[in-house]
Image 1 (cartoon, rainbow, N blue to C red):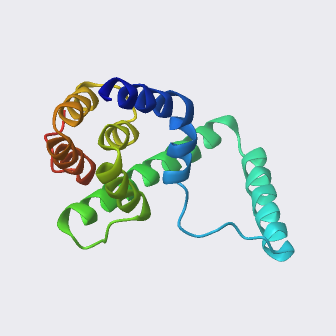
Image 2: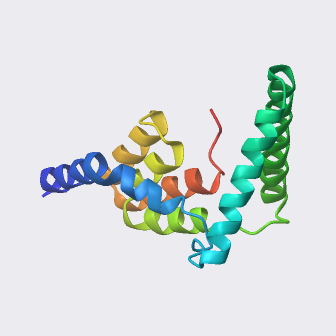
Amino acid sequence: MQLRTFTLFLALMFFISAPAHAIIVAPASPPATSNSSETAAKEAAEAYKAKLAAMTPADRRAFKKAQKQEMKEAVKQYKQEVKNGTRAADDTTILLVILAILLPPLAVFLYTEEIGTKFWISLLLTLLFFLPGVIYALLVVTGNAKKK
């Protein structure tokens, strides 16, 4: 029975892990389908490309470096807000918590995006005793496990 479960888990992990990961990290709002919003997005993209084309290579590098720095600051602020509890959990966390209850090792794999020590600990705990595997996966997914 356990060998069959392990084989099923491996099949799920290797064959559908990438599509499942793509589903989990999908944005909360559906993409716009109206023609006016599509044309507005295309116009904005063209304006951005024209702005970059008008810059010198040095200005372009500085502009892109400033954009990267702004993105890093925004991500840092978001993580701080989540840590302080001022921002609620997003859709990804909620889906990972549900997945951690159903398939703990898969949830840990999708959260860490690698097959590392946390994944193997989760797999071992799940195969030996299901409940400790669920608890460990929930700790990892919610960020309460030790960071490595």
